[in-house]
Amino acid sequence: MSCTPATPAAEGFSRAPIGAPAATAPAGGELSALDLTLRALRPLLADPEVTELCINRPREIFIETHSGWRREEAPFADFDWCRRLAKLIANVTRQRVDESAPLLSASLPSGERVQIVLPPATTLECVAITIRRPADTVWTVDELERRGVFGLTRPAGAERDEAEEELRRLHAAQAYTAFLRLAVRARKNIVVSGATGSGKTTWTKALIREIPRDERLITIEDARELVLDDHPNHVRLFYSKDDQGLARVTPKQLLECCLRMRPDRILLAELRSEEAFDYLRNVNSGHPGSITSVHATSAELAFEQLVLLVKQSRGGRSLARRDIKSLLYLLIDVIIQCGLECHQRVIREVWFDPARKRRAARGPIGRGPTREGVSCPQPA
Image (cartoon, rainbow, N blue to C red; front, side):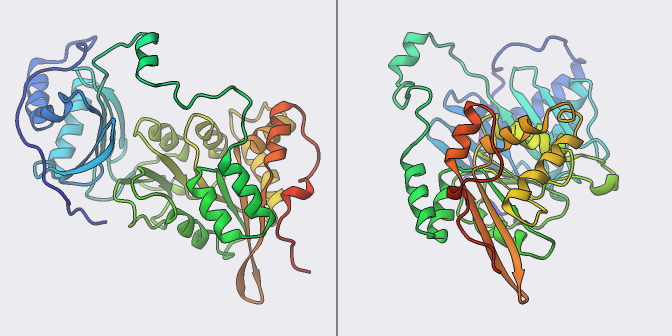
């Protein structure tokens, strides 16, 4: 991964704290060391326009304001500085962070919320740091209305929109390339299904390239496979497969960590086990546009496989199969079924059924996909 910055940085020093003090006061020496280390970030954290500050790789910072993301050079933020900051925050908050416990969630004494990920749970020689700046102002409802928060509001139940109508048209016309491109950009949740070697990873990579470049992506993998060269604002997270490695971090832990890292999209490379339950919870928590994969031999069997995976989880084992499947129909918008024919990788099905989603939202679901939901017949 390249660690080369792209644009100049704002530099300066400030000791002005932001927000409320911590509930428990750390030792004076630790607090002074943390404050000294954070000096280079204080001008950014004191800016009322800044909402999020992210260090994905050494010597660069992504800053979110009300007008979007921007990238700035940060010569001071090398690997050693980032690691030292992580250790100081852990000490001040009476926690531990190291290679065997690489995830740290904390609040700074000045009120900012911090999420930190160390290797091996992220890319080697990189420390992922996300700092959320608390708002300076508490707005009234009237003030929020005057700021235009209801400009795009519509009555609940008006699910169908222009993107869905266009997706229905493209799907019916079997214009699959245009359909999939729009599905990604319209932030539909996509599952790529197939057997080993059928092309799931190839298709996942292709779909990721359709995501707008200005979005912040966080991937969860057991090995570095997904290609993110088109998206400079990204973080790779790695879990320990089969409970191996120094840091035995699970996909579930990384999914929970993701929610504190300001993702536009969470891309989980593959659903294999009980993380399927947490994946669905996260998709339902305001992070649409996910892309993941599963092992199954048809689009309909992909739903059945996901039901089994959810039932394996602690949170999902008590749920009825019908309830799980109804939730799956509500949250998964598109399934791409990959296959092999005469040693050639092909797409056997492109499943899309918004009518099924609406029926699932209203109550019990029926058996199998509707005719509308089967678009690409399997070869004889």
